[in-house]
Structures are given as structure tokens and as C-alpha cells.
Length: 104
Image 1 (cartoon, rainbow, N blue to C red):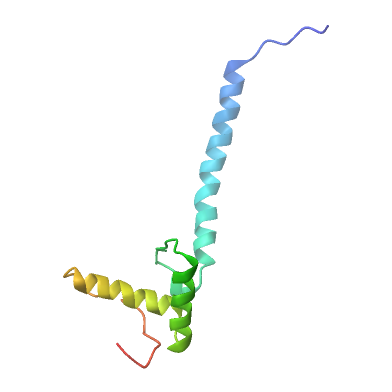
Image 2 (tube, helix red, strand yellow):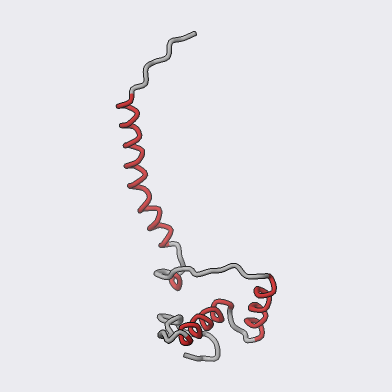
């Protein structure tokens, strides 16, 4: 059986540090590239989501269809109603135009 070469701890640590610094340099570039790929209407915005039952999902889509609007518009309207009920400013449509019935 061949003799095992002794482990060079210093060399292993240097290699690990080199990999970490390379990754640290690449990650901000990747994050910037991903943020640049977002449509202009979504840049600078955060996603809020939840899981609902199939019945709730179907109902919100039916309302959107009946009112000729999007589920996103309905959800923003729901957020504004929640804010109003809690005595907070209605800011869900901040920086955007409501597309339904020319409201807002």
C-alpha cells in the first residue's frame, strides 16, 4: 500500500480562503444581475405572498375575471383596506397607477 502524504493544513486553509474571496466577489455581481432582470414595475419592490386553499384561489381569480382586473390589483386593494382598518395610511398603490375603472 502506498504511503499517504501528510496533510498540509496551511495550504488547505489558503485554498479555502481563496475560494471564499472569489465567492464573495461574485455574489454581489450575481445579485445585481438578477435585480436588473426584473421588469421595471417590480424593481425596488418586495414580494408578499401566502398559501390559500383552492377555493380561495379560485374565488379571487373569479372576482378578477368578473371585474376585468388582475389578482395583483385585488390584493393591493385588500392591503389598502387592511391598512385603513388598522388606522394606517393606504399606501399599497404607492408609486403605481390603478388600472381598474380609472380609480385612484
